[in-house]
Length: 55
Ligand SMILES: [Zn+2]
Image 1 (cartoon, rainbow, N blue to C red):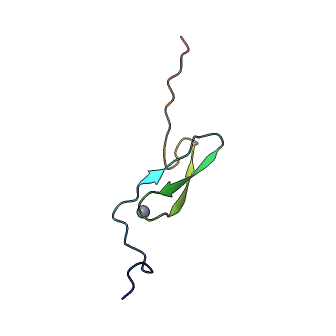
Image 2 (cartoon, rainbow, N blue to C red):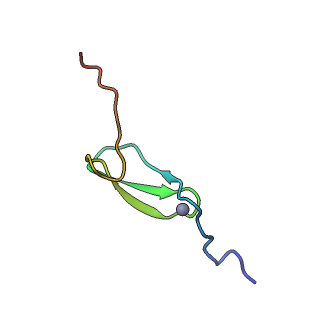
Image 3 (cartoon, protein in one colour):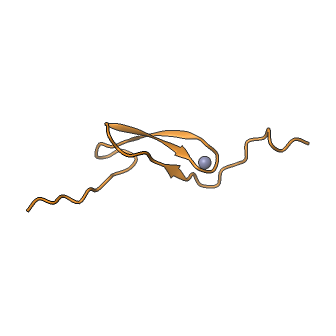
């Protein structure tokens, strides 16, 4: 019974997104280590709202 070789089912990915720099960012799941590509453009997987200091 080897439990390490079996991929543990991830109950909800915990995506760790790197600092956004381009159009897309690859997030890595903290739990299972899966990778997913997120789009920084509007309508993508995630939307980053940066506080604009423009009056
Ligand atoms: Zn996961």
